[in-house]
Length: 347
Image (tube, rainbow, N blue to C red):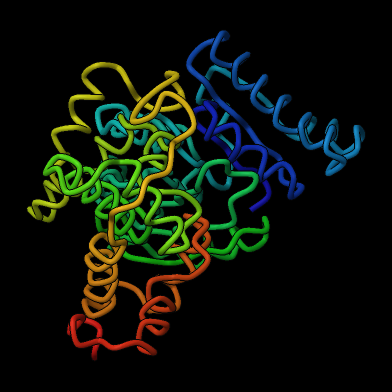
């Protein structure tokens, strides 16, 4: 693979284009119109410009990266791409017609990849006449920085190995999994985040107490409500909806508070406020194990189902979420304590 296409040049799509261009590949980026194309170019220039200002790229390297990216508003520009990665909003009504069009304009040998974080890759693949050459290639934001890529194969995919090899070639660490809503990271992460919201709904503790406990007691980089503000409450709400439709688990049904904030347009940092308007305060009075236990049990069940190995689950959660330890490493640490009140972790 020497030429890669990227459909959609928002923050994520532009970041994916930058990843491939940094690795020396030719990149074709396509947007819907000239205004969107200018915004995509600005994303690329600003991201690489920050790297220059921090001494991570020279001005010459920045220009070389930008010079490898060709921009267009016509999808026919993908005609000679070896791989096209879709990075449009997380709506099936946008993705299905896009993949049908990509199937029409791309050469028969091209691989088509979706950057979806939760939608079924199998359904997307069926919009094409090449389902064996359709995979998920889920990057994490910001794509130039985050190492993890979830490579998602369907029952008919035959190219997951090629795509995983390409991910390694561009400096990423792939985890290859099957087609299940949420894959590894979002399946575990959003269950944990929404459970925190449900505890808040029930008045178990304040958001400040829950966040403080998960940082101080559990050693996480940030608490669930601060993380939700960072991710975007609308994004979390949509993914929880997808997970709930698949699992039927009440912990995946979007919480009342999360739904209310989204309806009010309080979507987190990108709108200036979500759960918090500024820096979270600190408060005591919550036991982190109340929230940590179901997250660990979910990871154990994921492993027992045969979906992913313990090492892959740990790797995905550390690389995708910035955790210092994965769930099975956490279980191993807990084994040094009394497990009388934690029978789920005994096996």
